[in-house]
Length: 105
Image (cartoon, rainbow, N blue to C red; front, side):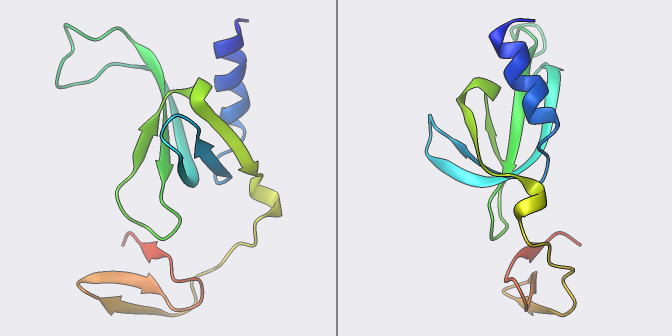
């Protein structure tokens, strides 16, 4: 197993954890790790690679990063999970009134 494969395998176990893309400085929640990703917009010119998807803590557009630039800030079990008991609509988007996270419904 190479160092990159080890990093990707470790991130596979951390979905829901708070992470930082050290290259861009972006902080958010680890959503998924895709293995062998090929950009569908450029399938002939792209070499398959691993890709990490990170969602902003308050909701919004997901960020992508290479696995080797992502570091764990807080593991998922240590984070307090909000069950989003009450929601409200603001500017056409749905937010949890308890944790203020933007929900994708």
